[in-house]
Length: 395
Image (cartoon, rainbow, N blue to C red; front, side, top):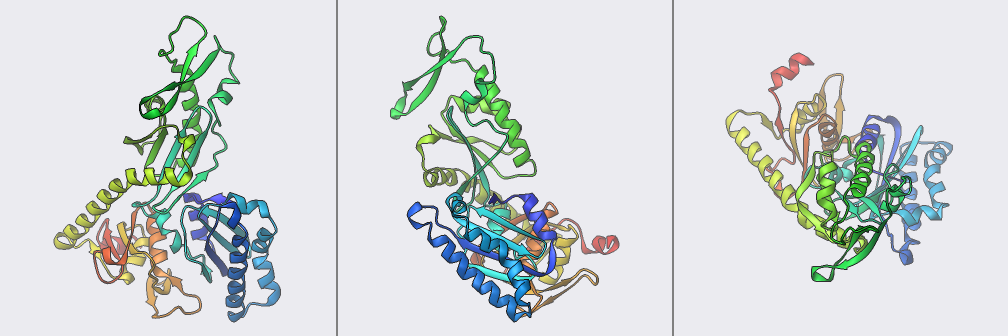
């Protein structure tokens, strides 16, 4: 079961079929409650079966479509690696399962496309962040939202300083002892067996260690613009900053102290306290830009029939969408026309979902806001990169 990435979103957004099933559920990761996870999934699969049958699907086709999810029920080990939520996507040609740092409502949606709107907090620029927890014994990367963090399993990153040094021929052996620090925190102090004093901690082994970590993170974070926070003993963090190549590393806010001593929920609480002001500032600036553009140059809209095609044609710079609200209908790429329905009809898509995904994939900024915080009452708003006339000529 994977963690959710931009590549995964691109794959899911491009897939269309007569039968696409999207499943969302909150998950338990405490051992005493793990048995609740398969029960919840069974209930969702029952609902999916009902929806598919109402749409006229034959029993053998329904069985084949849902089989990968039923097979997951037979793998108890998979339920021990979950975070706060799970998302599953099933179609005749493929199936995908993701751990997500969210607590989604239980939901089943069947249609021609996968339903991605519950993942908005992972798409929104005002919510997603990463934490790199560094200690000499462990290296962990976490993906987080306002609700939770999940560990991201990165293959090409050394697991510990000892693992890095094991492949080298040391000039002299390094030892480490634990030194007392202010506040009763204990940091590792490295020293050689020669005449070097205990406070002359050699940086070169750490620098090599951090170079390998930075290299391994490049593939994972190469398309990201989310802030990355550092968690670790204070001595480590300036050294890592020197070798870091990720442009969105947060420089000022650090989570000082040994992260090995923190439970995930504790690490999340400290991380969110650090990144929330950054998100609020960016969100406020985007809202001010929207209102200014609305008053001056008219490069804004709250008309969903204009916003959906604009998102498809890469015209949107910033999109504001409400969390927990749906708008059902269809977009016809041939005519570039949008049809909106009061309630979901067979073959409908969530147009808010479509606009947000296309905006994100085309390099725009998406802000997922509570309905009361939206800048307009119509339910969606956008700031455009260029006027509609230019789009019409390009189309």
